[in-house]
Length: 228
Image 1: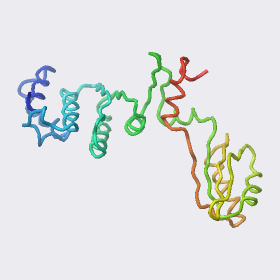
Image 2: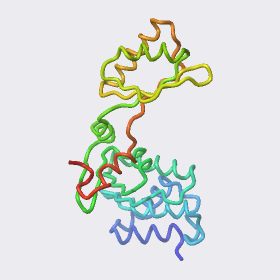
Image 3: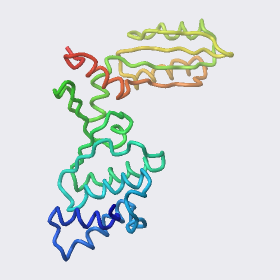
Image 4: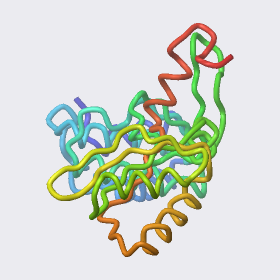
């Protein structure tokens, strides 16, 4: 039943922001979180996106060193989602932001460090990049060549530690899936030159790595955290 500004001024009082600084402090946060234009409206009449922003603004009042956000983008449309992510990222230089979420896209978009908790135990704690790399025992590569199946198979058979998971002709080209324990970037480079030497065009090349969703499932799919 409060207006946005009434609520934030109330929060500022609760958080012991000095009286003479409250209005300016609240105004700064309203502008930072994009709710200045609705500051005079009752919160109950705001859209879901704006209510999320007001909650976020309240968390920023007094600029705490640590800000804890629990599923801050639930229910937001794509535009609001991107705006909220940008806002969260903008805080990283001056605040420690702890984001609790089961949405791995969200985690990947805004977090520097990921902690995975399973049955009350911390089972993973690393950067996004390191977590992805350390959990990839092998890499999967998808290719499409402008050639025939026999030629492609002969060239690929010359590579050690490369398993051909599938290989077939489709619409005048050859598609295949490879799996390797080698450095995927180096292998891509070697494959490029091997086929270029035969004047065979590579129409498509992709390296498939484990997603954060896959890694999360690995760590939480069993009582031991998914790891031996």
